[in-house]
Image (cartoon, rainbow, N blue to C red):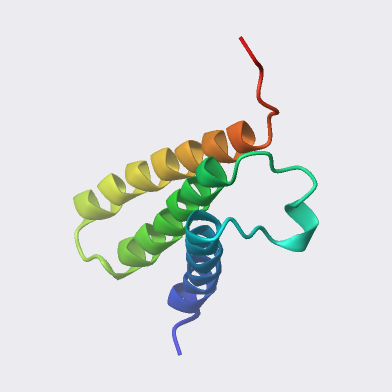
Length: 96
């Protein structure tokens, strides 16, 4: 078994399942329910992080050096995008 595929693949699956559950039903895991005010950005943020982990698996399986470097840039951008969405989901709404 190749652990460099399994280790990022497991969190990708967990983040994807949790993100889909947040988008479809509004369900948030128990330890985050008190902090999350908006479930839709939270779900999209989790899906972006899941995509980053999936791209990490694809980068490990890629043959070319340029492909691996390009996927590295995509991974970093997806992680930053997911983190921004997760932070925005935890901020309370401000009425204007």
